[in-house]
Amino acid sequence: MSALRTTALVLLVALSTANSNARQQVTTSDRDSPLFLNRSSYVYHKWFSSIAVGNYLYMDGGEISYKNGSNIIGIEAKNTYSIDLSSSWTNQSVSVTQIDKAIDGRSLNGNKLWPGLDNSSFYAYDGDMSWYHTPAYPPSNKLYKFTSDGSGSGQWTEDSSAYTAGSNFTNLVRVGGAASACGSDTCYAVGGYRNSRSQNGFPDDPPVPAAGMVSHNLTSKMWYNDSLIGTVFQKPWNDGSLFFTNIAGSAGILVAMGGITTNAAGANANPLSFDNIYIFDIATGTWYQQSTTGDIPSVRSSCCTVGVQGDNTVNKTYEVRLFQSIIWSTS
Image (cartoon, rainbow, N blue to C red; front, side, top):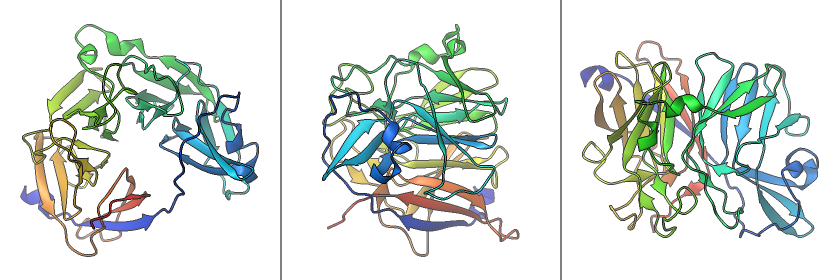
C-alpha cells in the first residue's frame, strides 16, 4: 500500500441548496418539455446521469420539477438530452436537444452511463424507476447502448451482446443507489439496493441491500460480481461516490467516499464519515482504508464528483470536487 499512500487527495466541496418538494402525481400528457421549451418555469433536474461523448454532454433519466402557477410539479424525465460543449453558453442561452428514448418507455433514476471503447457511444446500466411512474413495473435487468451521430443526437438500442453465453450477465439483478466509475476498459457499480422500483417483489422501506461489486470488461464483454462485505466495508453501502484515477497503482485505483451504510436487512441507515476514504487497487483487487485530514466535509450522500489532476506534479495531487444537496444532520 506504500505506493498508494504517497498520493495526496484534495477535496474541494461545493454545496447545493436545491428545494425539496412533495411529489405530485402528473396524470396529464405533461412530459419533459419544461426543461428547455419554457425556461422560466424550470426549477431543477435531479437523479439523472450524464456523460461526455465527443463534443456533447448527454443527460439521461431522473426527474424534472417546474412551476405551474404557485405549485411546483414533478415529472419523470422520459427522454435523453444533449448540450454542445464546443462553444460557451450560459444558463439563459444554453440550447438543449431532446432525443426520444424509445426503449421500454420508462425513466430510471441514477442509471449508470459507461463510455464505449469507440468514443462515439455509451451504455446505460442499473437504476431504479422514477417515483412519479405509478404503478411501478421496473424493466428486467438489461444493458442499453446509445450510438451518437456526432451532432448531439443518436439512437438507443438494447445491447444483446450482454446476454451471450458465459458473460455472467444473467446472474445479475437490477439495483438502484450503486456508485459507479470506469477505468481504462472496465466499468464498476458498487453497492446499492433493491426495491420495488428496481426489481419486482422487493420492499421500499427498507430496501434490500445489494452488497456486491459488479464489474464489466468492455473488451471481453464479461461481467463479474464480487462481495463488498468483508473488505474495508463491514456493512452494505449505497448512495456513495466512486471515481477512477490512474495516479496510483499499476492499473489505477477506485476511490469510494460518502454514502450510507445499513445492516444486512437494509435498516439502521448511517452516513459514512469523510474521516476515511476507501481505495480499491484494481491490479491487486484489494480494498484499503485511508484516513483524511484538513477541512473534512460533513457527512453526505448522493454526491456528484468530478476529479481533475492537481497542479502539484511533485506530490501528484488529485483534486475531487463534490457537489450535492443531501447533507445528513448529526444532531
